Amino acid sequence: MLGEGGAGGSDLHLDAAVFTTLRAERFAFALIIWFIAVFARILDLGQPLAIAVGHSVVVLLAVLFLGGWFFSTRSTDATGQPVGFSKAFGLSGLTFGLMFATGGVLFLLANVLFPLQCAKP
Image (cartoon, rainbow, N blue to C red; front, side, top):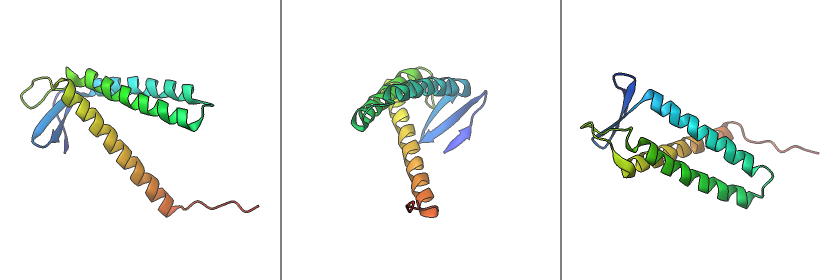
């Protein structure tokens, strides 16, 4: 459950735990990840599929570790204490898992609603 917290932050409630980060910090992290994704995509241009997938896995792991490091001191739990690397790493993984699931559902929904038509020569 996601609710708006005070002073530009928001609360993320997971299994009776509350993690808080400031909105500006989330946008700063999103900007860092965007630059990494663009740079990784530029490196993958013209590469075989296997190498591109391998780069994607490495970039995903790097982003998870970066999320763990970035939010380890910036996110706090319900008592106001920093969450630490392991919980921040888990939150980053949860975020990517939810994004992957949402993207998969949208992809499947788009294919059901608008099936691809093969071009006839």
